[in-house]
Image 1 (cartoon, rainbow, N blue to C red):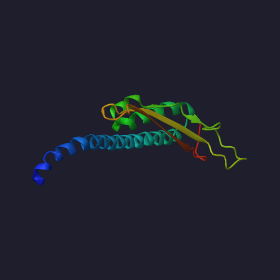
Image 2: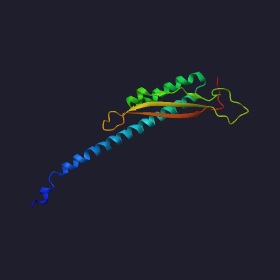
Image 3: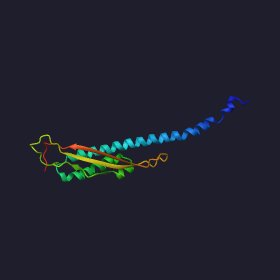
Image 4: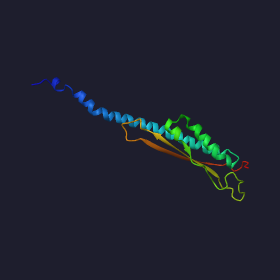
Length: 150
């Protein structure tokens, strides 16, 4: 009869071979979710910052350039794939945005809406089937009714 010690020989190696791929896949999944969450936050901040900066303008014609500049500046900390593909859709301005407010309708709120998109590349995490993920965030900012517009 074999001793109990001899019968268990090699089981740790076998367990490691079976469990290691699952542990690596779990690790890559955690890294992917962390990268996605960080990038999603940066895209959201870019959309918010661009919409707020747009509402600070006095001229409607300045809004697209301001939005583009703010998005480019905001995406400096994003992963390279997202920074290079980050784009803001043309800002959507309400009908009377940057016009004189209607004194007959004191509750009318004019807004600027900015949508920012980028593509996050996850192909470096080879164990996962995820290759690219598009992240889109939209933010709407109200215009101050009582400031001067041209």
